[in-house]
Image (cartoon, rainbow, N blue to C red):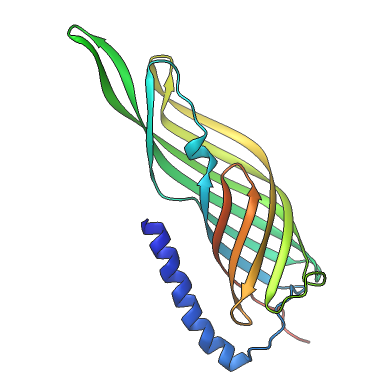
Length: 214
């Protein structure tokens, strides 16, 4: 909830700033992707696969999870007017809550347990921008494919009838489709959906830095 509120406040602040920026630069500025541009983005992920797709061995009872939504960072460079190459980062951290069953002298009982999950992912991705095909003013649609390396840590992973520290490293293919909607010549609202083994979709904003005109 705090993350969603922060996102809404950030988008509001960017929108207010962008209104002044649009007035000074002109509202009709072309919004299509441009060669040589650098576009950093920040977004927040929703429908986290790591939160929901987990199982426990016998003797443990699954409860809810607590924590924050994943946060994404991306910096994309325009190789051509349609193709971009990006470095991507994702940080995901939350707590699994569950119970462990015990057999006591007075009968079975439950003890609450937690497993703090943390994942830091980095990768590269290539994007193809469809502004020359989908010609909507201020819209920059794109599709992308990439690879990410995920460093995952559990500080209380259920193993047998006990808990253990566990570290994993995985490599995943990422497939994305999304768009930026420019609220000024520089700032845009950002969203994408697809597969990256973290979330189904993310929402955020971008800031575009254009190459100097010769």
